[in-house]
Amino acid sequence: MKTEKIIIANLKCGGCATTIKNDLLKLNGVNEVSVDIENDAVNVNYNDDVDRKIIIDKLHSLGYPEATAENGLLLQIKSYASCMVGRINNL
Image (cartoon, rainbow, N blue to C red):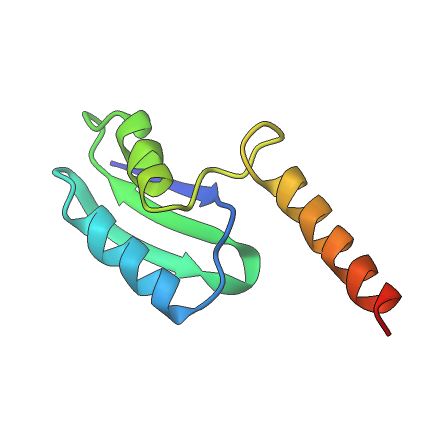
């Protein structure tokens, strides 16, 4: 058994968490899933024979890519910052 914390992008609310949990639990070999909205994290407990890429691909297909420099987190932060600056400039 493996337990892994995966930091993802685009996690916003309880609805996101429910979708993630329900869909990951449908994957063979995934035993337990919990979602930490405040920390943009998905905790997954899965069998040793499950390829991590399957979990990452499923999250990506749901719109929650792993937060890496190339795939989400930095670009998301940049977009939020740009949005905030734009809102302030419109005051």
